[in-house]
Image 1: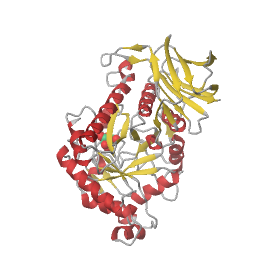
Image 2: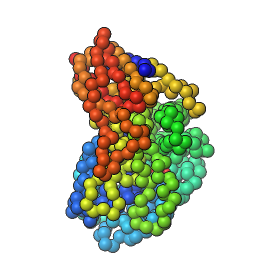
Image 3: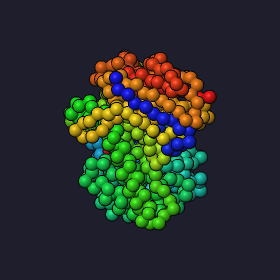
Image 4: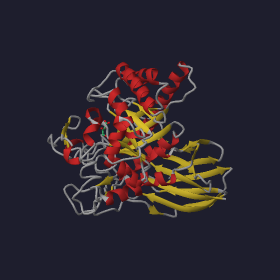
Length: 502
Ligand code: AHR
């Protein structure tokens, strides 16, 4: 059996969690929109064609904000195609995903869907084929009260009150050569600055996210961030990070360690933000929007078979298994560990496309279902609210080819907003049991309200429309000893333990 211990100290905190850290992402691609959230001929659809069963699962998941409408799709998108009478909207080629976009869902429909669920929209402007002019018009269309050309068009199209979208992305992955309208850091930095200025002139209350690198392995990583921030620092509020992981070599030990990469990535980007702050003698702090993160690799081979120019092709339809639960848990913990700087994060994506929620293709009767990764996200979104306590952790560890020291336990604790309970999230990466001793200072642990675990499954086992067996189970694997709480974490397990405080 391995051992680890954590010390919870009331006054040693990372930060209050920004609820937007539990965001997600809907892109116009694959079956995310059409056949995902929107399926007019499905038995559970509402009058606007949106699936009620999917809405219910999004609510249950606890998502707080949804980034929209892309993604790579964004860089060729004309937002004007998705407004006005639906029967007059054009069908367009989506060059990013080589599919056909019908534009039956646009800003109005999506905003209404988001309103009904109670999530904020993180809107995005096209920096690929378009620029300053379209961006300022879009902000005017969405956020201006009325009495101008674009705001009156919104009213004409049925929405009197402004949408008042608060958070906006200035383009998507503009460093990537695959991106339509790909730019150098200099080109993008200048364009993003001028776009940001114009957007904030229309609505000074908005917050802007400027593109960081598409992932930390990009050859321009680092130079991109420094150059873009050098241009945009005083005009934007967040820098984006994107990263996807996968068990490419079918090496569990290595795969379970990938959150260490995320940790390094965040630390590096924070350092770059602060370097530019120092260079500019600025008082302002740029925070991070990790607005695409997830596991993405299961669907790589099947995607090669997909033919171009179809509506809603089944792209990026990863089916998640049990080992993905453990990895997703470690990634969630890592985001919480950095909640002092990561203020927005989006699990990419939400429905069907690399998603926790899944619907069956061409099926108008069966219900939407929860993939395995649904559960750790749901629990973190529910109990990861409040104040993150500094992780004072000691743990036995192991070594992999890539990492010298991988702690067997990945853990974080969050003190609830009312300070009546603390929730311990923990992943046991080991194939053996792990005894986790929780000691506390300034917090008096009273009793365990609930302990759940996900454990004991074949690591490759998946959920399906008919089998939802990979989910949290209530357990009693804890005891109090000498004022400490001892948790016996099962081998390869995701654990959530809620402790009442006195
Ligand atoms: O989420 C899928 C794709 O991944 C997005 O369109 C893009 O931004 C990223 O490369």
